[in-house]
Length: 500
Image 1: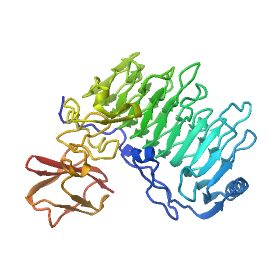
Image 2: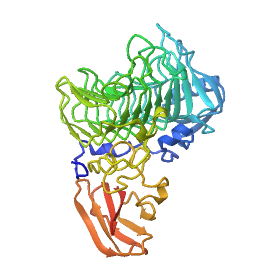
Image 3: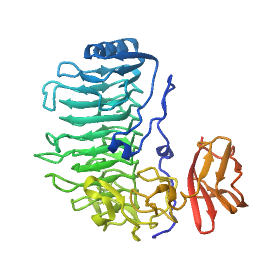
């Protein structure tokens, strides 16, 4: 089916949409690319809810948390640059209030540091740097490190973690607890998870370990050296299990972690969800290196366009009879994709014989394509609207068809001069509600085609001049994601359209 069109209905259309947040006094749409996380150039999340409290000492932060819990929340805490020794086995921040923002005043991730007493066992005590019970809380633009248990623990819903560096925790870095019905609708993005010694302190560690979590989004993060030194393998960089469902893990870079992404574990299930556009590299130097992507008792899960280059015998595994209705499509790996213990999946247009030379810099985790390799470029199945971009948020496809793997190869080293990028195309407003304007710097007439989520053409117009602009009435279109195509000669320019 190389180059064939393959349209797949979404199990959960909401996987394409961002988790909504309640109204606040001010909030930009905090986003980034994974390259900005690597370079530490993520734009701060300039979000404010309610009254602003400025703090500059650990005591002032203690007092602010006590005040927030007593008053019920709806406040923003801005932390001045400095180190806050906020957690110990005898006391740690336990936020029961909702609608609270904690972020650095400067926006500098490295300048505000929240710490525990160290990366060591505190048993029989408990030491979490932050524990969120309330809903719709935000932590942004700072560093969390040196915790006896977790950097962040959460049982409330709609947690937002943006541009946070979490280092050197003795257990999992972010823990979604199993209390109640679990934490739902979390969003973790633009953040760095790492062990600074190049390996973890023990095997009971992980990046995100989320029990009972529904409809989380984990995107544009970097995970480094979450690996066990002895005893047994570490948990995953990202793990949803214990009755989680419909979670999305996308556009992350995972480097030398024992296990990359896991949905389900043994007989403890996960249902549905999406794993797409992730890069997972492991050089095999840690003693317990394991699978890149693992599905265990995870029915209905979609695994699309990931790139996995590891030393473990299998790049992707799906296990146990309950794992069925799974689609594994357009993945680029150097090792097999393997069924185990009676699992069933649809495998379509995966390439499992990648060479290290195909990638820009594999040892650093950069698994972007280094060239136009014929078995990869334009060889993927067409799975719009489940997949509309790549790890760098470049619109797919850039050529005739989707590329296989997390990176959509641009024919030129410059995105601006690549096919479809040498023409300036403007679609506005986007998202759109009533009327879409389409304008392009093209001298010749073109045809315009718009497809809905089922791949059905709902609008077409031929021999149109886009220089002055074209107005398209969208009032009758249902809310969702659409694909716009501008065709001229042998060129096809594609852009994503979102209708609200």
